Length: 273
Image (cartoon, rainbow, N blue to C red):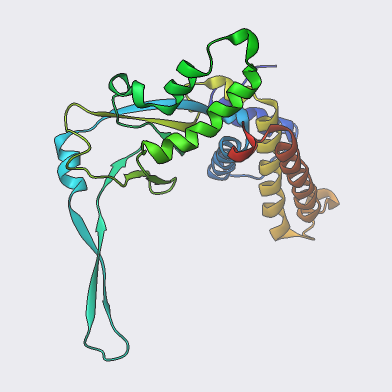
């Protein structure tokens, strides 16, 4: 069996799994490509092998600072009561474009130079004054304390509030762009989840779940196509029964999606440590 490592070989593998080469699979090339793209999208969103935890850095430019300090008119609203009072709402352009492969951003690291303020860092003081003897201190208790102090550190020192939506591909940083950063010298570092590119990491096409799920979607499309000719008799008395194929594929899809939720989906962030 040839191991699929491109979209073309992957499509041929899935079609052969449905019987291509022995029987005709009534799906157009465009339909097959659409269903495979849909399977890859689902795989990236719900399977832990479809994404990677990534740290990305970006050098803020002077143009970024200038743009972030400007506004655009979001909407001009007229009061419905007197019909004469208007209000123009402005929206800050304090965003940085993010690659479309980024699914979510979970952290933006502070801009402070920690090398100069460690003496006033609450975690530094805890290590200096309390963790003097590892033989008499519980490492488990210490680790849990550090995690809770991350939140306290956020309150005392302050971190940059940020907003991100996948379909906008914009990272909004709600800060004082005039005083907090210097264009051309300051970096931001983000912790993000990025979907893997199958053209680069071709082993994705050989994933067992993805092969089954893509084959299921192709079968569902095949059944939907044949159901348009339900009851039509072919040469030799054969009758098309696309509805049965469609229902079988629908049940398989439901089982596979239940399986990915139970076995392959990453837990919510509040459940990870």
